[in-house]
Image (cartoon, rainbow, N blue to C red):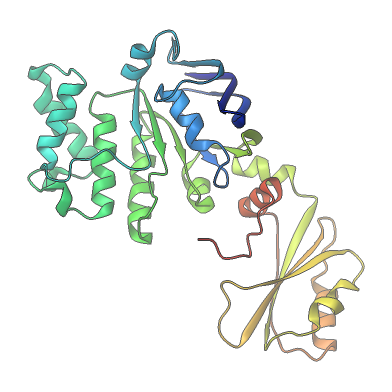
Amino acid sequence: MITVENLRKLYGEFVAVDEISFEIKKGEIVGFLGPNGAGKTTTMRCLTGFMPATAGTVVLNGSDVFEDPDGVKRSIGYLPESAPLYLDMKVEEYLDFIADVRKIPRSQKRKRIKEVAESTGLSARLRQEIGHLSKGYRQRVGLAQAMIHNPEILILDEPTSGLDPNQIVEIRNLIKEIGKNKTIIFSTHILSEAEATCDRVIILNRGRIVASGTSQELRSRHKDKALIRVKIEGTGKGLPKKLQTIDGVVGVMQMDRGVEKGFSLFEVETASDKDLRKEVTQAVVGGGFDLVEVQREGKTLEDVFAELTNVDTSAPTS
């Protein structure tokens, strides 16, 4: 369905995408993950023909994006990060306009607008002005315009960006539902979203693919270490140094997020073949600290992402 070979994009001397290659099969939902500047948006723009690549080959549904751009555009629906909406138009007017742009025959327009409105949950909003909709519903309008011509492939750049938690769940479920009949690529910074939605993820960093596979496959490849999470009362001053003395402990990090006031949370990294919960418990209690919880976990997708992109996931993100 999608074949990318040695795709390269330069901005002057800056290498935004550095000879990446991948394939996506029909019916897959694939997530693009990576920190800011990793090359996700640039790759998507090259796939859609929105901008030309410097080198490489991109074939979507049998059409080469450089040799047959019109054929590619007929096969894809594209939702950029900032949805191209006219806020003073009503939803139905806007979709009618996009249907004309997509050269959908007049005899089929009403049917297509009704179908995409139903599939994106917009049926009750067709008479409303887009500017009066919540951001979640504007994203739905963006999805509807991407689907109006019934493409086989959807390319969605940060479709949940700026949404509140409830809206994120709504759009995530919508993508999963649409993905039953479409091939979908979407980029995201929300790792739990990718894990819950995607059949496979591709992680980019500094313009290169650093990993590709299912969430389970990626965790399995990086299972040389495990984590023990320790929750105690108080600040835990001096505890990391004490935990570091345990044989098999690789590192200790104090977490700043997700901790209730008056408590401290530590992540103890250990070799995967060692369950050191007993030793950690003895060190905490023996050191005079008030232990609340000890839990051993394998690598999460977030841990793998941090390793591959050199991101400290304990630090607050903007």
